Length: 221
Length: 377
Image 1 (cartoon, chains in turn blue, orange):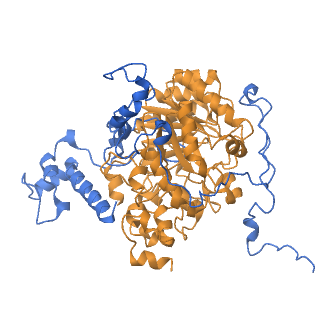
Image 2 (cartoon, one colour):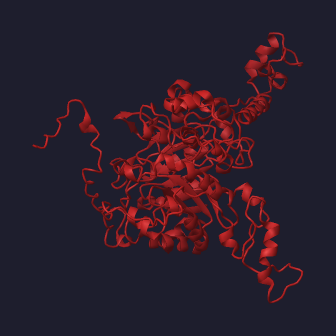
């Protein structure tokens, strides 16, 4: 998405929500006293001043909610149609994704023969590729004999051509063993000891690099 | 652009709650350096009051985490109290001691699901966690499914498992896992002592497009989510975020706007991942629940100032000249501070940063500005 598009969408959101701002009654009364009537206070082309609906609603205690008020969260807004999903690291997600719900294959067992197929016979399962064509969204690659493997064509690292197995670095000693049988260990039991400190070439002695720190003696030549 | 977040209402919609820092594993990349219990962890009664306060503030999602949250003796009682008031309550476990009994407890508590940490295939996972832990996670997933709960997986990506994601996806599909969240291991906690195992920032050039493709290929078998510290902008961006929103792009860190983190001793932060201290100085703790209510801490004037009162001058490095700087605000605050506590270096874990640096215009939607290009000359 280009910068211009990003900014247009933001601008559009801000304009739309500005019209939905309801000001507190005290502000409305102030506006009324200062001469603003039901025609609003739109002056010139200043979109930010377009608060006509706000002024009209002013004085109604029932509507005296201000955007940015913490209590807004008590409103049911689980869908949040404007902002992306919140996914902080180390939080589990168990929310239906609208993007997925929109797919026609939700809940369907793609490996099962299609009971609704026109011709259901011993080979019905083999017709899955034909049916898959109808359910695979356009951004997915065309169906292959094994559809499960074929639905992904991912970016690869630049050196993927090399057959480079993942090897645990030799300096990486095995992690400390957990308690003998942790399942039998009550929650308040003493925990296993901390792992030994890493070798000196792995640990970064950050604090010792202060200007006052003593430098290690040089190796005599 | 803070206005966008403010217009959406400032409320703690998503909460990560560390029930205890105690853990029965010592994973190499643990960002919170979990192991021993904090000296002053909240009691059950205090936790129940906090649960009520979270609900009163309109929280919509809570993840109980740790440490290993099941080492908090009454985790299911807290979970049940939350689930009675909050739509989506889940728990993240390392799966080491997760049996059918725990799965049944979680189901009875009304949790929406249980997430387990799985960081690669067996060799890589066990190498980072503990021998045998991979198989225990697989067992834990099955116990959870048998109890009628969906099981999710959280994977921390590091140098050793970065190439396994497509393979791991297929493994998870076969295991029946429905939710998979991806995140990068960052050099905090124990991982600060293993910096050489952090996937190098340059790898974002292929890793982030790959993650975007995994997200895009979500279907009824598995739904893939990218954590908020994966991005930003460029061609991959919309696939990394929710697709059906009017602004499917990163709008800046939402810690203190829509996200809150609670430590097991009652400390409140904008996001649980944020460090409690930066260079020895308390930086992100906004208050403690033993001294103030959650409502008071959340609404205190001046709270979460690093975000709510963000100034563009806070940014450093490339982020200070980036065309998206006012929208993005440097990306994930945790990642930025972990990389450079003074923010002088910007956020090199950003795709846009790396694409401009390495001249990979093919990953972007438009050519970088002259100012951006000049930064790396």
